[in-house]
Image (cartoon, rainbow, N blue to C red; front, side):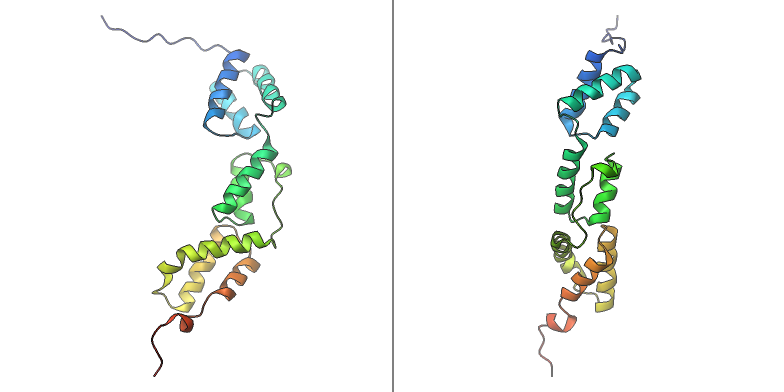
Length: 169
């Protein structure tokens, strides 16, 4: 005789949908789109989903603006530029209207780009100046920094001559 755990049949009701939503929110904050997609994927009816989404919004548990601010701060700490942050927010389901990104000329982005280059600088020590510039440009561009910010970082880098410790003869 084998024993199987009995699995309750799926019940499309607000209580179960809320329980599911709270479980998802216990892992991390979600955007409205992420939450509604997960609820729909689980099989809850649109009527139940709409009611639960309204409840979550009213209680402040789903707030795209607050989530966008938190994700933006974290993305800047991870050395992403404005374009990289925007793409990250869009992937997380944050609509453009909820994004309040700092202006591209903000010193925060230049500092962030500088921190990223400083972390990677040691791995570029053996490269010639042109290769370094090309690799730094590619790195910063992939992270979403503007051309102006990248040029500023490249201008602030020490030249190859400044780094050599060998005296000239």
